[in-house]
Length: 115
Image (cartoon, rainbow, N blue to C red; front, top):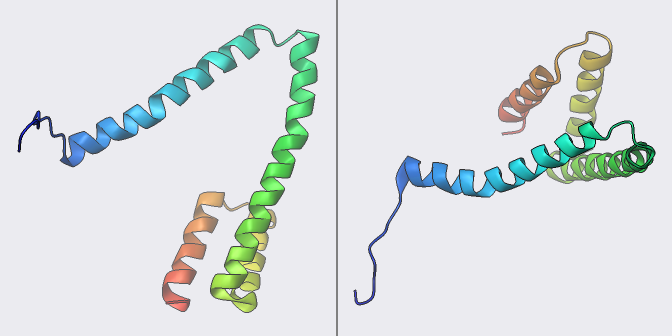
């Protein structure tokens, strides 16, 4: 093949490089921004900014929750969505089960009941 340099990175090493190239720049910028915010945490401007960020995050989480709920209803149906939601709510609120175990339980339910 004319003009082909021949640098081919494949396999696990290539995947690691691709993930690192995707994640590391954003991670470094977030760490730098958080360091700057932490250094100026007593500033009135930073306090005011954090008061505006919280409602935005709450709205984004509500939108994400609604999207997951609608996707669950469209994919699994109302009955299964309500069963998983009710069991998850009881496990989280009543028994203080770690959310990772609740998610694993929902995945097991989906694997065995919905397949």
